[in-house]
Image (cartoon, rainbow, N blue to C red; front, side, top):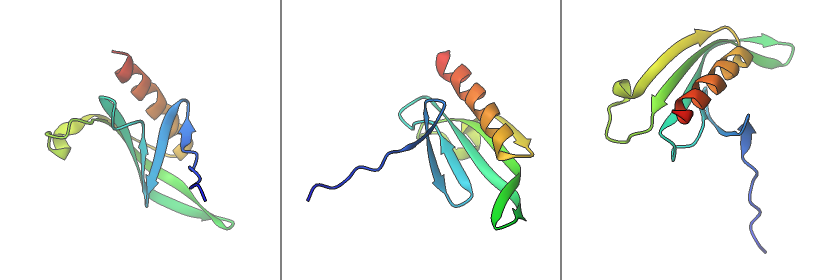
Amino acid sequence: MAAEKKAALEYKGHQLRRKDNMIYYGSMADKYIILLQILESKAVKDMDVATKVSVQLQLTHPDLKSRDRIVKKTEKDSLYTAMDVASVWLNRALSQ
């Protein structure tokens, strides 16, 4: 039986990968990637909703230390606004 390939999640044309409270937005094959880290969340009915999200535009160069990879960073009060900022930053960085 052939293995089924899972469809990757995408937002505005770039891949999304999640590991615990961290979301990687973009491709490691590109020069830049966005790291979103959910710092705080609250329970709304039966779901956790992010209330504080860190957004970092990072270089993907493997030889750089993690602190040297950060190009820009900010914090937002919801995942929705964080994703909007991430999309703009990533598109601008990749178009240069």
